[in-house]
Length: 132
Image 1 (cartoon, rainbow, N blue to C red):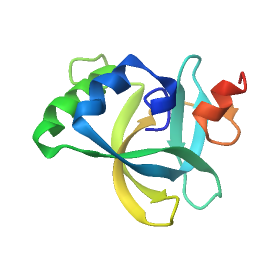
Image 2: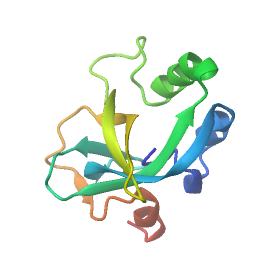
Image 3: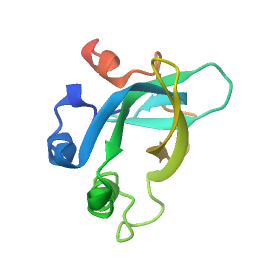
């Protein structure tokens, strides 16, 4: 989770998900984060040196389907949401702070981003606290 669902944002949806998730640690994913107004959007990249900071969680397997359904609805990319979706859920490689690599699901921006404002350090929580 790299945006409004990070624990520090105290979003209601994070509290809904807490019972189905176990925090693993802080992690990064290669990419760029953009300001979409009241939330960010991730655009993944490879080997350009830009990293987006977020939190890695393990999902309770018994609650995976319901949790993904809730997340897809929150992100506006559930089957019933009109196309094109603003986000798409995809698998990415993340790196924990101690250096371990993991595979994780995340929501990637699925629209043009050339005109969007970039969040410079890839950390939505820090950027928001600074008044970004």
